[in-house]
Amino acid sequence: MNFVFTADAPAPGGHYSQAVQAGGFTFVSGMLPGPGVATEGPDNFERQVRATLQHCEHVLAEAGCRLTDVVQCTAYIVGVGHWPEFNRIYAEYFGDHKPARAVVPVPELHHGFLVELQMVAHTSA
Image (cartoon, rainbow, N blue to C red; front, side):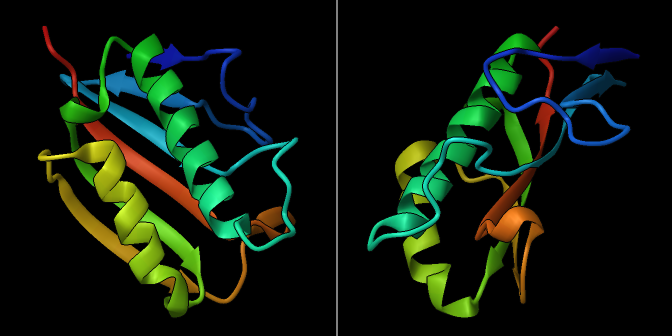
């Protein structure tokens, strides 16, 4: 088992790792947009989604993976109304790669953020 950490993504706010590698997979913990991401304004949701996807990319890179290695993603978004915008931005990042996915509308997330992502990637050997 390998615990993954990069300074290029927000440090864990509790007793967990940014990611853990085990059994040929990399499990990325729930990622929030993190400090420094504005939470107000007309493009607020888009900024948060992009920041969160970038954090995931950094953690995956530290683990020797890329978004194209992701086999499953769970997205928690505040309000089902954000679903189409989330899907548009997500598709932009993933391109033709379509991992298994669940989008879970929730009433709120920690620190007032609007999106949290959790991913599982297959670790290339």
